[in-house]
Image 1 (cartoon, rainbow over the protein chains, first blue to last red):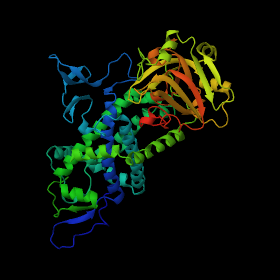
Image 2 (image 1 turned 90 degrees about the horizontal axis):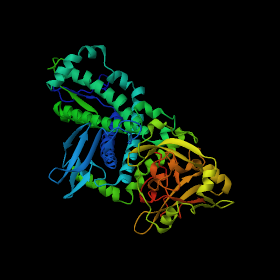
Image 3 (image 1 turned 135 degrees about the horizontal axis):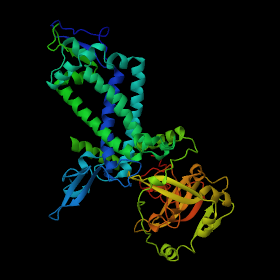
Image 4 (image 1 turned 45 degrees about the vertical axis):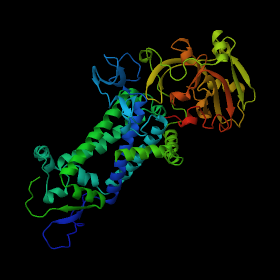
Length: 289
Length: 238
């Protein structure tokens, strides 16, 4: 909730240092941080689940006449030693230490993703599934709370849908981002157009895709409307998409954290914790956007 | 810090109390899966073009059990399926008798909990038809499958259980054929159950006995199945 105006609260001291205003509503802050925790755990427990069958296929089953499109394995190298090998389409890479073969407590273990990125750290599929589904529900419940709130408070329409002037400034916004320049002054009170589009894509495309491809892997939910899974390419395609979209979300988080760091980390963090965001003074913001 | 976080997650996983909280998600999943799909919703059926070239064998590939091996030697000619428990008429069925009953053929996708899937063509007798002959009593709530394959050095044999809703589901069959041939030993000969709306570990292979019970608490460690006793979900709908 970007709520400038009525809730704006000028700072008490008289120096023209700008003012704090109420940027993020409580619901947005709570769902933001619980989502952050849920997504981290979903990723790590998901990679543990992936490790039970470190291979991705396209189609209705894993065993068709087509080779997997992504696969990690422990392979024998030319010199007789063991290496971690990762195959993507027809290209095989030596990924020893990370994918296929990695160290776990001093021992070399053949596994897809290494122990430092999985929950639990050692192979335990049943437990990973319990983590994964618990936090999947947390994510879904969070999403419902957030969307209910957003529609009642017009958060999406007011703060996330790009305005006509946003669209006109998209070229400049891209240039600004590439140069790591960020809006200041009153312009910083609103999300910029790339930010809006990214958040919309995460909320209305990527996260729903994660949920949909997750459901597609459920034999019980597949029976709701027999054949619906073919719309995402079949069950194994759904698993592949689940994996790809998960890493797309990781990419989003990396860029998101990077932008937070370079555009006033304390101000950003405070606004997502207390809700208050400081607007720098002066009519002329350094960057017009 | 990452190490601390991971160590914390491992400690929580090993604790007595935390997995109980996590498993609240399991209850929610089961309820929602049942709420959004009808009792008789049908699993997708495929065409011959979709068949996996070979149907993967997982878990036991050849039971290390003298009684089973003797049955296998005789091509299961003297093998019998015992059906008993909370039934009015306990019965034994030879493979020949099962083959003579009404059969159902279905090309379905087998989803393993590990993440892989294979598509196979199964032929078998609907479990509902077998149950009709033995007449379960009103006390019967679960169908337990007792299998021939020992899973560990202690000789614990595989077992599984399903509720009456799945037992009477039209696609729940006791399969004796895979891809137009007698069910291979690697895939559960002479008889395995197909429960198409659940994961592979529910579909017990090498079935020797079907028992109707009011509770599975007294079987194995009480989880309702070999893998359930080792932390997996009893209702394996996802």
